[in-house]
Length: 66
Image 1 (tube, rainbow, N blue to C red):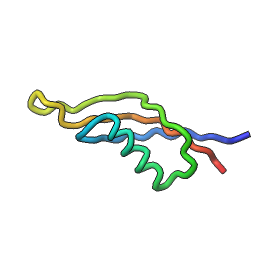
Image 2: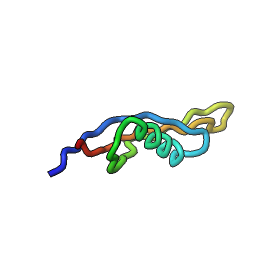
Image 3: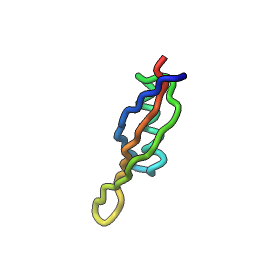
Image 4: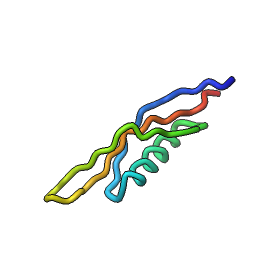
């Protein structure tokens, strides 16, 4: 039986939600090992001058505790 833990990470990108999600995983993986999955809990954008300037995600990352 594996012991799993979930952390919540907020990340952003000026390209896309997918890129923001990759940024969240990349940043978390610097201090968390054995990441197994990620769940995008919410998405939002920043609008500047009627244009989307930033994509934001709130991601739940699941990893195995060894």
